[in-house]
Image (tube, rainbow, N blue to C red; front, side):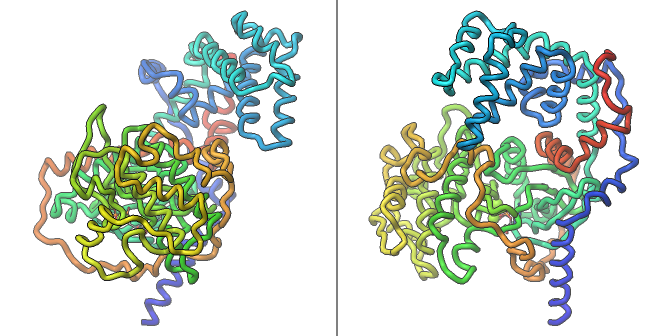
Length: 537
Ligand code: ADP
Ligand code: MG
Ligand code: MG
């Protein structure tokens, strides 16, 4: 009644307000925060066997500290760091900015007087670099110079870095990253959705202000329904992927009653909601192309890692606050070890490919079929083989999927859209788009998309969610009264809960430290102060 209405209002208001948290207030709250002190030897042991790529390029804090080391060491190292930086700026720049970035590279790095910088290049590299005139400025040459620079950095600069204070600082961050995570680490806000094993609610990290979504899996329900293995697979896949187009995992921990997956918060609602529940049915074409491009990049990312998603449908695609979308709910995903194929029936009726329905062996092909169905649905607000709200048996949907041709009666279908859908909906895998080593991104449907910029997160969304709207059902609609009884846990269960609770995920956690300003704060005035590059550890 009224009281529930008031509860919902309060829940929404506190949730929206948390997202506009005052940064100075936060800074005050963490004044006493310091990095842990380390024993030199144990710290260096921790680094043993670690690769340049992981330490200096992939991990956000590692890359920052290596950069700082290079810039403060000597002119040659600094020039190498700047060169890589300028190259990446040029590569992602648009039109006029691209021209400016190019001139910077030519002036700074390709003049004969900047020989100090060139000294680590082989003669061949140096020749190439001299060739890099106005008229001869292309991606291939620059790739070669980029590689030569990386090779150089992997040598002496890297081994010097490992002995420097910057690396000691990095190890302090790694130690901090390993802290135990409990539910005291977060504030909890309203429920956003409900799944098979529990609810998903919004949470906020107390000392950084970072908002996340927390998927809480009820331990007793998991055990009763035998869902433990599935939960672990979902967690292990989520922590491995690191993509702009997949909901990334930031923390995995367990509380008294739940196993918790803390992921990117998607405040814009799912695409199903956008197709059917916002008045006008269907999504306008500009957005359909943009979302499909992001979904395609996300699927390619999974496939390149050997993962089949198996649950591609609009309901599983969530929008963030900027209107960018990500794949979520990887509970049905499977990782194929080299060469394996599977024939297990999995997916959602209406989106399953013929080879799944016939229980034949399959691999990545099933995701492209489901993407075809999803594009169709975004445009026409119905499925290719099932009308909206049509009362029809699963058997009949299966029959149509196997036998019928896909029809395009809705007026919004243009020629490129029909073409890409028809190619994804080829019943035979051997004929299907995306399944013969071809790249779906090259289809004319995507003519307006610059994938290079899209995949760097630089292409703005055509539609942005309103900041003061909660794109989810009211929280009390997710209330759950069913109580699970007579479940007790043994030592095997406890062991499983511990195996699941690995705490912070490096990539996301380090990004959080940088984005929230904690990285800069702890690296400057406090906790040992600024790094002095001349003191060895
Ligand atoms: P299940 O695997 O049990 O179906 P989901 O992962 O689909 O659980 O999550 C259930 C619901 O919670 C989703 O339908 C969605 O409404 C909401 N949800 C899930 N993940 C997020 C997220 N990262 N941000 C916002 N809402 C989410
Ligand atoms: Mg779901
Ligand atoms: Mg699931």
